[in-house]
Image 1 (cartoon, rainbow, N blue to C red):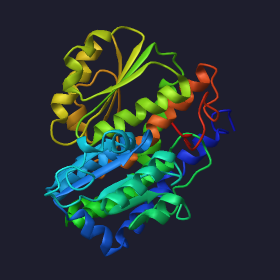
Image 2 (spheres, helix red, strand yellow):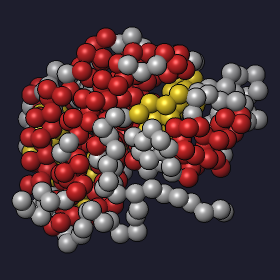
Image 3 (cartoon, helix red, strand yellow):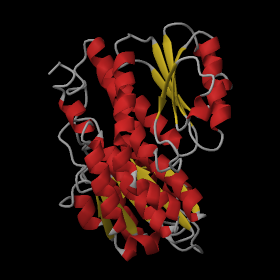
Image 4 (cartoon, one colour):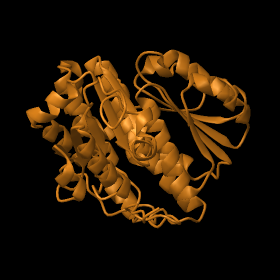
Length: 356
């Protein structure tokens, strides 16, 4: 094996297909309690780091599938400024029914996740824990726990845990919203895993260049995926990386486009043609580009690298397939820059905070 293939983080990312399949199956068997909580008028989805970006993707998907208000916020906001987040309980909007809080944590031991679970219980908010470890403090505190059966991992940065917890939550959202197409296309993900592998090969090749800056573009639920790509690139390779909604990139940030930088577009579904046009504009301004689209029509005329992932799938169902290519880019770029992505500096697997 090459040094790349020996990376624990890569080996765990490469098993994401199996972890996604197990998560989709777990979603099909999730308790009625989780479905009932998601049927409330307003839902708060929260996490820290990668789990917050996962929350962004899930909240956007839930708004569409459930037709209800779903709001994503970092765990720290529920600790430091809960009155700006909550409608019912904890001193905010006393006339409102306490909304359920979906708390995402790979380990179930992150300090903020446990703190929020305790605070929300005290304030009367029902909680749903989403984790990879059933025997964890968060799982014990929550009213309902959803566990990704094959998502746990030993690496410091999140890979298959993110993809599988995303698939798990999307599956539960599809059931709660009775979205049969979303549910069916999520069930089809294991068979589509080769598309993620093919895109990852492009990511490995692009990671052999020392880019001066990388920008990831994604709209709707894909914005959370773009932000997660940005985090992976930042924490493993330390290359300056930013994530934007595609059309927002035009409003100022596009000024960073120049030779030596890379712009990645995660496009698919409604608005894909307009979003692809932004990627093409970046190419005209000198940036290298990589478009990850869901079909040939969306990619028509693209001048840079193109990968097709999730052909004909529901645009939300394809999201778990989009993480593996980003891992390939981030891990290869880290090696190219002389970094060890299995041991990113200043980081541990679980964030445990001491008293303030």
